[in-house]
Length: 334
Image (cartoon, rainbow, N blue to C red; front, side, top):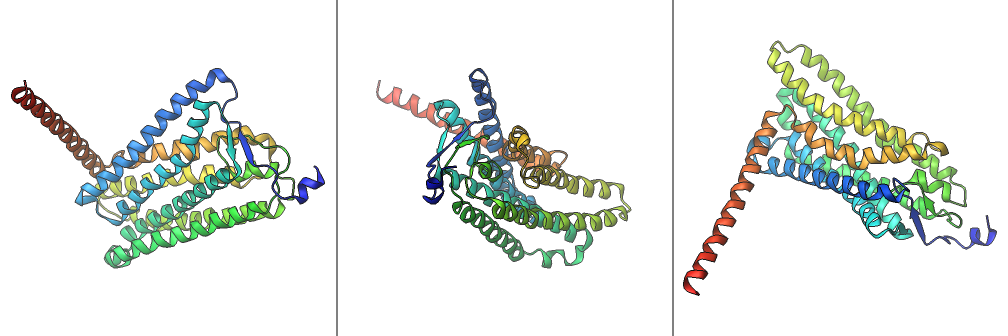
């Protein structure tokens, strides 16, 4: 590397995102697929949120956390996919250095919040099934808001730490990022300064942000499984397993892809696999979450039906009003 570039700080002012596919013929198909996935994800998660807000039966701690998770899923896919769609549409794959920092800063906040919220949901299930007599006091509305607030603070600290650490690196050589959004494992190889401390920081923070929550979730569900097996009613056991099974499925998908992406730095040949993991993190997981939580959940399904019927009635009412106005205008102003 040029020694003058090393001493002059960040010489690179923009990066080139190579995207998912480099073949131009495949880009229109990728655009359509990801646009569809984005609309389905946003629509599905906002529908879940609307159902939780509209149905009093769902005003419980578990669905309070699920509503927050839906908002995070919308944010997570919005941080990455619209920018990728814009690049495909304009055939311009560059992103400024500041925009790159902003993208992964917000992405890390949202991913960190996802991790802590999944832990809070596991704790909620533990209290509901293993400590039912004290559940209402231990998981009061105040406790719920405190858990969410603490999650935001911890996620913000994590994102700020990585962002500040990244600004200490010099980028003075190649600027092609082999990904469709900015992420640390793909940015480190482009630095012309040592990234050992940054990689150690990423590994240790990832362990704290994911390792500790995984331990807490597994411990919670060991107690939950023991308590559920003691339920005499087969219907009660089935309902408990369905409720916990949805959460466990989402947690396994989230932490599984996260471990693969952030716990094995320094593997250059895995860059194309990272794109697949990135698709899971930013698109597949947020898109599947509404389906997983509504599947075999009669309360959520009933609330979703009410939301959809209400929306249909509202649309027909507006259409009827417009037609009435049209006829009135024609009658009085021929």
